Length: 222
Image (cartoon, rainbow, N blue to C red; front, side, top):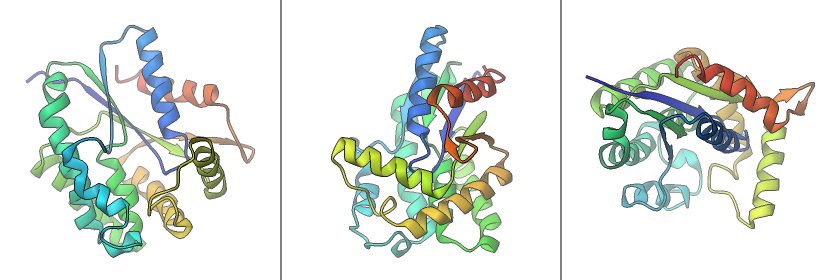
């Protein structure tokens, strides 16, 4: 069966993940690559209704009020619907798919609710659930944006100020974000994600510098 290439950009909130996703899509357009872009979660679609309730505090004001596996299911349903209704046939036709977040976000954000020694079993459960049971495609490459907590929080504050928005229950919990960093690094090692450092000498690198690292990694799978 023909299938395309699936490229995922992942990172905690404030890592510059979405900026790098946009830069990558623009670069691929310049290169005249045949690709399709997707962004998760898909808040405007019916399949995201329950996870929107979760993020807005409908099931509890703290992320830990919904356990890691239950919350993972909410996000997985949105991705399942997206694959079946939006990009599945495009992927199967052999095109490149570039995704801002994917199944990988469950590993980072829901794994953050667990103790370190619980992570390997959770990661294996998640892989089986999303890729085998839900039958979602396995990424060809995951680019993980490596950052520290203070820089991520500063980036988030600047973004919220510029857009006049407030954070969801994930973004407003500093302890939770700290755990996301811990778990993201562990997940990157467990799954073999490709790390791109956002920092140099303790300072945020330029968008252009980071992009060149990202593009050099994805060229190997195109």
